[in-house]
Length: 355
Image (cartoon, rainbow, N blue to C red; front, side, top):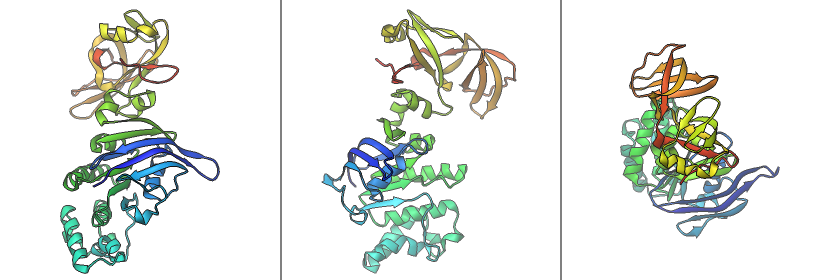
């Protein structure tokens, strides 16, 4: 497949609204890169600039070491799969998948071979003579993907392709996309607001907010070592718990609890003694053993795990325990925090405090 680089890319619209700021990204050959963030963060705008559907205000886009910033969309050799499938309702599945090749005036035997190969990969051979209205949502999305596959593009672009599907179908389509990536070894740039999709699909995640890149890294890097408060709160479900706290020698303290620090964390925070920071802990890193008292408000059993919502005094906290718990509203339980899973953030810069 291909490599791609975006260097110092900015997008400013005619009304002087800036949607993307100084976007820099290197995509390796065969890499699955996911742009993730809340609505309005600039991820779809970035994807459309890669496709050529939006002009790049400043900066450059390089594909296979060739600058294509000013290259028309049709000459970039990129295939895009849209959220709404964008299928032709009057055409069969076969004709929808073959359409771009017909426009290129490819040999009919070549078209047939490519369409059948894509149909085999996507398990659509039995659907080729049907029209889109006769297909399920998942099948329509596979047709849209098949239409991209037959072109053998340098890069695949996916713009929230699963957002119109129900939860069960989204789960199965995620697995199909992973299998598809393994079969094609394709270079993929994928946009979603769903952090679960980002964590399960990506080789590399680009987390965005308000037009800025907040962090780039592997799913595990963003989960275990978030660069700032935004990434820490956005990546992970349920979200990380945060508490403004003051640092002392050997412990941190806030109006809800006092937490003793082990030697490593105490050393990490030595320059913050006497100052306020933001303490963070993921729900799954809270234990049922400790000296902090939590009053239960809601107990959500999820099978192998239980989400326990509660308050420490009046501060809301969420815990995730790896068992079926049966706490009731008003129960008071003791909780603790895993020392090797504590997160600390500079209150002024919001950046993570790390060694």
